[in-house]
Amino acid sequence: MSAASCVHAVVVSYRSDPQRLARQFDRLLEQVSAIVWVDNASGDGLRALASRWPAERLHAIWLGDNQGIGAAQNRGMERALALGASHVLLMDDDSLPAPDMVPRLLAALAAHPQAAAVGACHVDPRRETGRTPFSVVAGGRLRWLECSDVRQVWEVDHVIASGCLIPATALQAVGWMREDFFIDWVDTEWCLRARDRGYRIYGVCAALLEHTLGDRVVRVLGREIPWHAPWRHYYQARNFVLMLRSRQMGHVSKSHMTFRQLKRFIVFSTLVPGRWQYFKMWLRGLLHGCQGRSGLVVPPGSR
Image 1 (tube, rainbow, N blue to C red):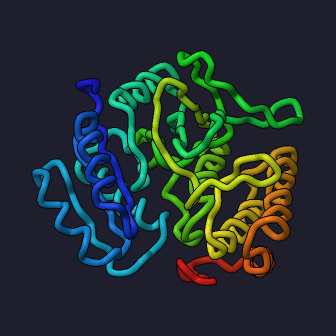
Image 2: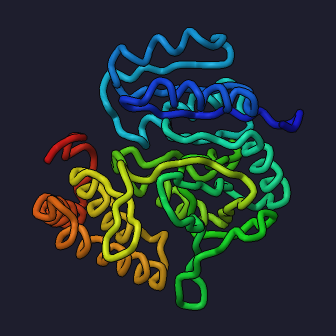
Image 3: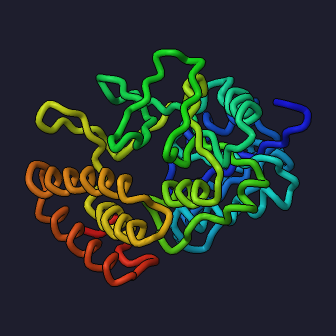
């Protein structure tokens, strides 16, 4: 890590696997100055983990209730900046960074000073076939950007939060994550907002992150897709509509993203077990999105 950089990782947990979380902390502390761990009211089971690392390296925040991913990230980033962080690295609780992930991300930021964020190349070990996580809408079509050359740094439309490195100056200019989304589309909305303010977003092929999308991977019509419980689809549908109504998205991007979400709605409402639950959650989310409703509406685990 550069002597001029003071990277603080912000890790949000919710009913996490303690062993995997400990592995993540061990890997991160070899690459960052400190970790700000924000727990979204998981209960007392995880708290014992905090004693395994020095207090100056691991700063724990215990939220009294599940406030959602955006609020937890904001509480963590506020603490990180107060501690003097020059950069904030967002991490989900189930992600495992490669030993050189953070230096790779810092190098990409140094080469692209106009970046609001750089994101890691996340790989899901449950998938039988690899797929690039990076994409961009260009020339009226969606392009998937391959990482066959690990030296490649792609300009992209957005990156996921886990493995995303943000300079403190960019965070202060763009603003915090939207807490009223609760979960889903929080990272995408922030990236769109950053680009609207003249910043750019980059995906870094050499910065590797083991990360699982969805509770499991299922195969539908010969294709692997991430599976989330039905309650998540409420927020995916609602927050997508709220994002469509924002001024940060161009018409071409809106068209492509709408088409992809329409495909997901059809697949989960017709081809996945529990399709009626998915159908109801999608319709409820779309209705509330059109009404402008936000915040926690469907508690995690609801059917």
